[in-house]
Amino acid sequence: MSFAELGLSEKVLTAVTTAGYSTPTPIQAQAIPHVLARKDVLGIAQTGTGKTAAFTLPMLTILESGRARARMPRTLILEPTRELAAQVEENFTRYGANQKLSVALLIGGVSFGDQDAKITRGVDVLIATPGRLLDHVERGKLLLTGVELLVIDEADRMLDMGFIPDIERICKLVPFTRQTLFFTATMPPEITRISEQFLHNPVRVEVARPATTAATITQRLIASNSQDFEKRETLRRLIKEATDLQNAIVFCNRKRDVATLHKSLQKHGFPAVALHGDMDQYARMAALDSFRSGENPILVASDVAARGLDIPAVSHVFNFDVPTHAEDYVHRIGRTGRAGRLGTAFTIVTRHDDKLVAAVEKLTGQSIAFEGPGLDALPPSEAREERRGRRDDKRPARGRGRPERGARAETDAPRSEIGGKGTDEPRSATRREPVRPDSDVLAQGRRRDHDAPRRGRGSHGRDDDDGPQVKGLGDHVPAFLLRSARIG
Image (cartoon, rainbow, N blue to C red; front, top):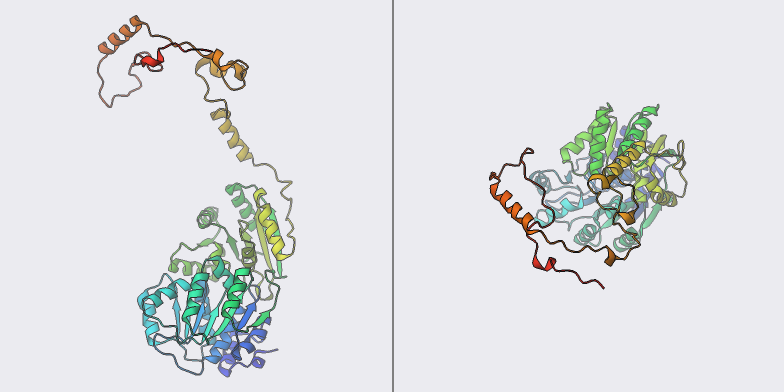
């Protein structure tokens, strides 16, 4: 089947041919005719199968007739991240080159004024992240009553990021008679509920079982000790040993680990760039451009780069951390092996990751083999044992209390002889009679304190002679402590 058989307009077909495509992917071949027939579509396909073009191309054909009005977009596309939204805008620019359609991008990190100016002139296609879209609606700068077609892309990612309440609110602002396209890679129960709520008799297009990985990706587990510096050393070894590595994305679970690993790779001479959610929009786009151009072929990223980014030539994916959500594993390794190309995905695993790995294998329905020795053959961390030994030398064993001063600190006597737990003598037998301070001793102490020179507040030098150390309360013993204790 060719694109000409799908019912697309001549202008769109010319743009597709110019872009170098002739045969649609399965999700495109099945979804495009239903979109052109103005039916609701529920599209389920693994990442990297061309879902973006599956709604972009028919939308361009539909938008050839009609005209945009001020502050009332004709179509609305919701994306979970800024990068995905910017990528969809690039698709409209590429395939809509022969049409005079206006496109606006509403994402964070960009001036409200520039976005308001585009909306005021009227836009045919509005691409937005949920938060920034609602900001414009609350300011009274945007009306969604003219939306004819609504696209909710990467719905499962919306769920992970907590956008479902915003999606529900946005769906109530657009007309009930709209056409809705709903695309996702996985179908958790919450996504099923949302699709049943906002889609009307949808056509279900499913080209792969949910949460499956591409057959073109070679997946391997790499055993490592749990110390971060050992995992970083393992990652560097994998990168050096990969003879066919062209570029790679390294995924971490936390943003701070992204920054730490990025600095470590740069320190060891690896050309790397970082990408995570705390970076401003300019830095994020600059990092992606640097990675796409090959200037920095290693991208260290959080899961913000795990969904939908169109970088077709990624040869390797490294999971520095096993993802806490099994669905994220599918999206992470989906950055490689795209469009029929071969790819390799390595996941660094520690002894604490067995449950996470089991969840991934259960979700994908396949077991992942270890590259080299498994966790059972993993030697103990020498550095960790050495640090543990140093800690044991510095502090006493738990339950023994602080060591006594002088010779008693070096004794090997059992605990019963040094007053610890486990003594066979009753507690009453070990009590000592209160000692009354001798009056002569107290008098001498008073004379010594009276004769001692007065020191200033800041005089605490080591050579100062403070006299004998006062033990306990000294001469300020309360009267009730001087009474003899009654035993028995």
